[in-house]
Amino acid sequence: MTQPTSFLITGASSFLGKCLTRTLSQNPQYKVFLTSRTAFNPGDILKNGNCFHLSGIDLLKEEDLSVLSKAVDKFFPERFHLINCLGYFPGYRTMAELPIDKTKEVFDSNVISLYSVAHQLIPLMCKRGGGHFMAFSSHTNYQHYPRLVAYSAAKAAVESLISGISNEYLNEGIIANTIALSTLYTETERKLKPNGDCENWLQPEEVSRFIEEFVLRSGGTVNGNVIHMYKYSPSYFHQSYYQRIRQ
Image (cartoon, rainbow, N blue to C red; front, side, top):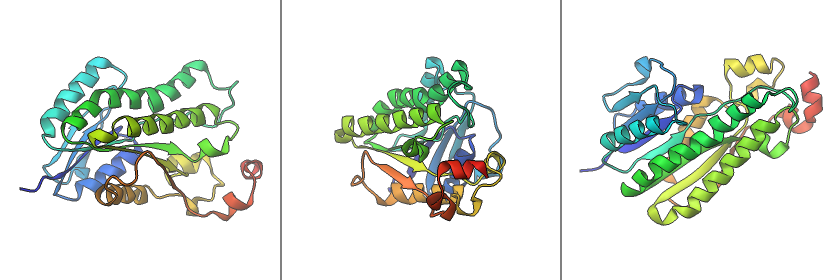
């Protein structure tokens, strides 16, 4: 009997997490496990009976991580892939403007939570025969933009963490990669960037379809990499950062 393709999505209440769930749940041959800290009703995005949602899980709390691990162990007797969609963007503020508690939240949400879920669930993934372990960073990490120092530093740490995981657990079948995203097309981003080149932003559905195809087709030949996803934008490539933010 052929095993189903199984996905665990952490941070499922995020915009990208919901979109990814919507994409994957449309295939009745997939098993999808969702986890989120905030309560939300997945509603009709859970298209088949092979989906399960566990809310109220804080990935920074050991007791919640233990609950998650036991639930995942029960739901996935087979190999599964983990896609972390949890993160926090504090907006465009200089170091002096961003309070320390908000800076800590940036690192907690983007880095410490990822480390925590890896620490808790990679041993179970190894026991099940491995799988893809994927997280998201940002193209801002490579531009060193002002007003994004904390966010860029956290995303750089995400990429380093994933690269370390890929080397440490390759022999156990773990394939770890980071996807560095350009701007996603969401209403929140439209409000943050009212004059942005939005027709060239990434559609969340495009990212979801890429992840599905990557997990199914890539095997283990691409491991430890940062995969850049962006579209060509005349304003982005032909103007400086300072020209763009003045618009």
